Length: 202
Image (tube, rainbow, N blue to C red):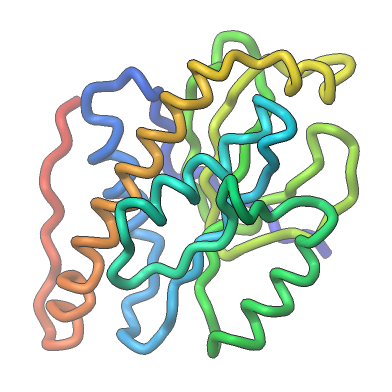
């Protein structure tokens, strides 16, 4: 039985408060247990412009350096259809009870191009191009890079790199911010204090 996803936030990349809004949504989803590792799996390939969103994000995160999050999927070492099962098996063997965030590009309505969705539940990679791949994660981040319709594979191939780069930079910046704040949140909760989020600009 497939788990139903819940969308917790939809933010357009041009929103001035996009980074903070994405970070706040992620902080609400992440586990409070201090010993539960968080693994980010960035899915995609640089062989297709539209599908390069995940590996671009992974590369930006590696360059920034993560304090607490473990990242898989970069331009140099992408996570894609051919190795996804092996990567998932490696993650589950390496980390005890990991909380996994799946990240991938997706297609949508023309009016929704540029939107970033954050939610609860697994990501379904390959669904937009009719591929049956393992579901990934306890939470997801997707970026709408182009319009859904016929010949999705061709649509991804002909997606503007400029848009994909802008989405990747916003999502990566939000994850870096979340990584910096996350341990403080868990520490406060472990000693009985409520963590108060900043108020994002509307």
